Image 1 (cartoon, rainbow, N blue to C red):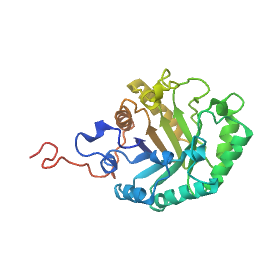
Image 2: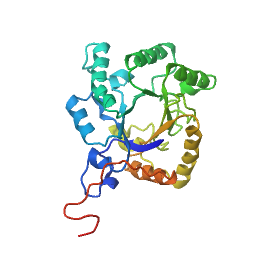
Image 3: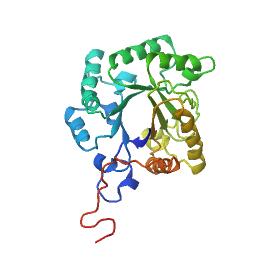
Image 4: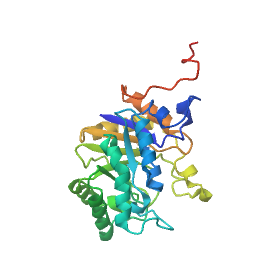
Length: 284
């Protein structure tokens, strides 16, 4: 099965057409979503319960790991110990797993998390702490896939049971990784398409980096290239989860819809589309 969606559900105006905005409306278009609010703060149970109620039974979340667990955390750490932090995250995610709606937890590590012994040890620690969940691993430092290291990295991921988060992103120095079309888990593979804005990838944007980095719209030729890539990965793994993250300019949802059409997918179990009050798609 190939599941296609985008990161977050609020910033995709082309989906809603004035018919209500939010996760319930989003679930009428895509079968998966990346839950990125969990990166900034471990989510309280009331939020999790609300999101579970707003989505159909077959809907799946890719939950982004909390930033304190992946080395992004700067400033005040809200948890006294790492054990407390991991336990809080487990308690937050567990209801999603118990509802059968957890696609995976995505552990995305920062550009300064390079390939060295202590970081490998931390990966093993994270894997142990979150062993009850399917875990995807995404790097942002090219040393993990450097010549002479790529095969060792992939072998490590396979041995440890990590799902490979395959990326499409600009090749813009050490803080970016190449596209490596190799599954490391027999059941699941994640593909995240970040766009190819090479000039904006390392541009802080005067503090507005999010508005700059992912400003990109894939053209049809690039999507067709990725269609071929997806077919190659499909031979290696049971299920593929594809997330478009190129949303600085609101392009992710449109590109995701294009990819669904190119692959000839017709999802049958989406949420009912919300309709305008009093009117049903133009019929009075």
